[in-house]
Length: 81
Image 1: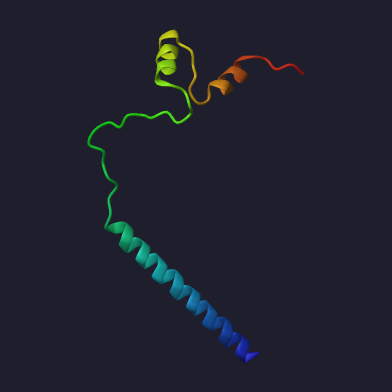
Image 2: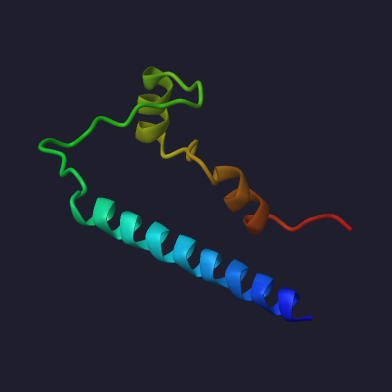
């Protein structure tokens, strides 16, 4: 019984040391870095397969083709039961 108590105590000590060292290293690394600030606005690239010409035409006509446009249509129209 005494050996089990020593083993548990040893495991807890090792786990506490691991957590402490991990936290110290994480804070040391994170403390030395700052998030980069973009110097100029970044152009938004479309990765959904819609060409810039289609986007321009949709913007002029007022059609919503962006993300979430289908959710807006579902909310705006009643669903058949």
